Length: 112
Picture (cartoon, rainbow, N blue to C red):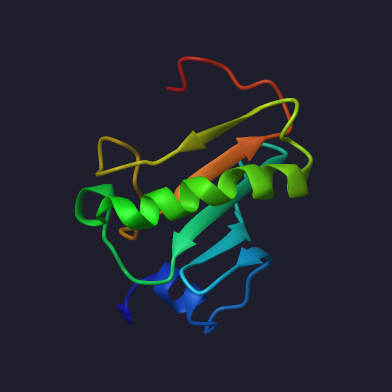
């Protein structure tokens, strides 16, 4: 755990948040600044700065949980988007690997 990382502190239970799902490896929470009617974040409990230092296993585990979470949120049939921002130019604002799941409305392309 990185004591200076807000997502590590959330995963450790130090900062309260609205949990959608949790297991021994990941936490899924509602985004506090949603960009869509449904916007949740998949957070690994173990700190990893970005996709570049994460290794594939945790990303695979998060991807395996997407269908379950999308169904739970009621966006599985209409559709959704997954986003992993990496680095400053990629839009990453918290240096802890996380996956955005967005849905609940039609999403434009290109994203920005």
